[in-house]
Image 1 (cartoon, rainbow, N blue to C red):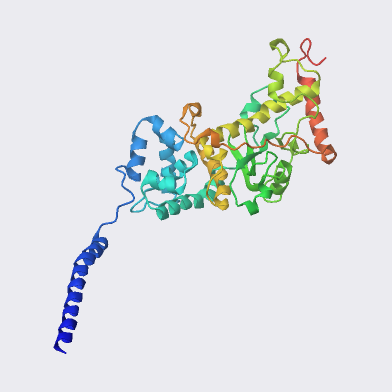
Image 2 (image 1 turned 180 degrees about the vertical axis):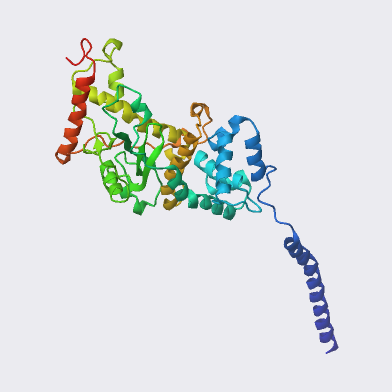
Length: 403
């Protein structure tokens, strides 16, 4: 019996020693895990506030490169946002940095992850600050995207005998442009355009200073330009009596929207391909009208070109929610107009580094170029003919011109 008790006692001692050994091995390891400092995620020596300060105080090209505008324009926007309490400085992120994040996103097609690395803030902070800028875009749109004054003939028409008095009632040009989007496959079919890519069809109106005066976003890529315009007319867009916009062949010719003559030479490239001796000669008065029409309507094409150079995010699909993607063209148009209001230059855009790989640019369909003639307005055709006849009477006749 004693032997058995000794065996049990020895077994228990052995177990205690084993437990002690495990205690001294396991506990330190666990405690080490509990008390080790976490590896910080934001380890850059250049946090967002310092990054923005360095860009604004550095070489003038830095701000153009990162934020797509001159330093003085960036500062003017930040001062406006602060003065009108549209954004607020917070303890961690001042208005300049909030604006910088947003413009960096537009310029680089930067995701939240990219913005986290660039500005050294948490994803939650980045997401919140970007959305706060999106939230004030409607206010900025109301202020900086305005319909033109119908009581004034634009100086570019008023001062040019090629356009005056024939186009004195023209207040701008309208066209649609396709902006790439990304969307779940089950929702994609309506957004598939004629090229087979996914896009939203965005309607813009602009004046002859290349400022946008109206924008309608969110239409599926399969929607026609004319359909988008019809919808805009039911949602606040209007043309004052006696005034008109210039449109291309994708729209019906009406008293408010003057399209070129169909089946007649129109595009500027077609006129440029003529020899210099024939460049100012026209087969008939319809061709003369089309040339003048194309010269003025080309302002909307130029405005699109500048807009997409300033903010190349408009050339690619993004990974933001579709609701955010619809807002991006409006935000870009707002900043485009602000830049132009401050006489910002765009001749440097062609010399900027490509932060977005051109191979990722999405092939977009061009605007519609035909519209069923039977839907055209006889009043619109009459007005166009009246302009054409006025040109015929007032234009000096040169040898070989107009037959």
